[in-house]
Length: 154
Image (cartoon, rainbow, N blue to C red):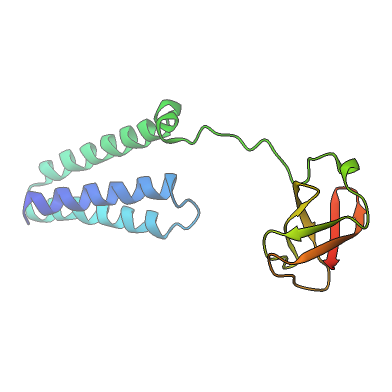
């Protein structure tokens, strides 16, 4: 078997292992496929080349695997690809004193049963228990409980 195929099997297997660790953790299918591809590459080296060459490829694969995993798990590597924005808001962080039962507004999104509504020139997350309300419909506040706003069709 040619060195190109052996090298491709080992590198693709290593890529699958890295994908298992970083991208799709928990599925184990990608990791198992990666391990099998690397094992086939090493086994082919032992089968078609000398035992000494097989030992070298095995040792090289182990060193390359450990180095690649260590490099990919470093925090500096993650900082290059990590999203650095934070979610700082929550639903209905507005001053709920600005609205009261009976205020009217317009649904901005479909309320099925939760969605967005424009009430008194402010956007709120609202709930319409029992009925689905399409966007653009006139609504009225029926109840305010803690930070949850309940509405119905006007």
